[in-house]
Image (tube, rainbow, N blue to C red; front, side, top):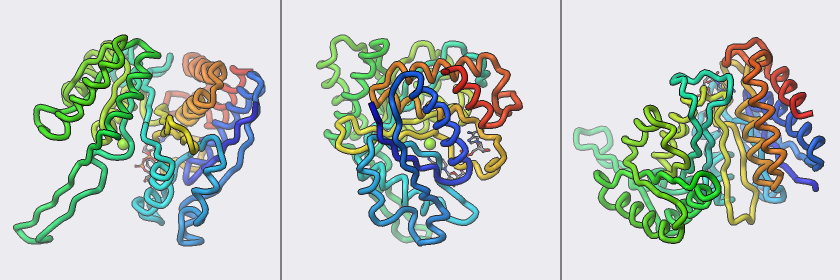
Length: 349
Ligand code: NAI
Ligand code: MG
């Protein structure tokens, strides 16, 4: 089997963590008997400075030819406004390929000390990635006066809410059979009451899944106090954004958090990425933790049907953090990005 991958290393530590992830994924390919055909696209803030665009005009068509996209990070805030780098590359990819599921596993790996020292932290967050509070509908009037008003309208469609809930129910069915549906229907009486109604409708199709509805504030507290009672969590764009940063913090920080942007219906490539940004403060020094990009790579392998290889990559990563000798400074070690990736690759071999 050969899988055709587009690599978008991006800016800052992006290229470092993508090289590290590919070292590990190539080891997995050799061990589990498949091949990765990669094409590297060096689209970045440098591209913008050189050409006035983050990616070429036919960038989306070129990405369309691949099975998956593995992205490092984009952003060079000293030279290019973040709104430009985000709107020029990441957002068009999410939109054009209708990547409506943003999935983030938050699990504390052995040997990693999260701030709570919770041993039992293992949840899967599923965030709606295309509409809701981030639809961009709204505006401002009487700007700069005492009468100024800003309106930001959240847009929830039956199509959008139902498909993210269905995906979450499927995932819950594959895991523990428990699903937490997040809303705020006591305070938001239109959109969130609608969310809850659709959740109940979809639940009727999944009698084997036990769904519990939570308000987002209570769920945030529960993630800290009783995380072992949670498994799959599904939330809107804004609520999911906030809850996944909390999840990343509890699992040991941005060095570990990985993310998949999926269109389960297919028709275009899904995109896998570490949650962190380009980290200009540590770029070029081998300090970046490659765990997040390696984990993103494992999610990509799973999506490609290489389930045994994906599990092998995660097991090797966890063996490396558990041993604790060859880890980067953010997890208490002295290894470089490449040395830690090499240790993970060695554990796979
Ligand atoms: P950031 O995630 O790049 O860095 C935040 C802090 O975490 C920094 O102190 C950094 O050194 C540390 N950190 C991040 N990843 C790490 C890793 N793998 N190992 C060890 N430490 C790590 O967020 P920041 O500084 O707010 O943004 C920097 C740039 O990245 C901006 O241009 C921003 O727009 C962009 N960005 C891009 C994202 C993407 O491409 N998906 C996501 C988030 C930010
Ligand atoms: Mg966020």
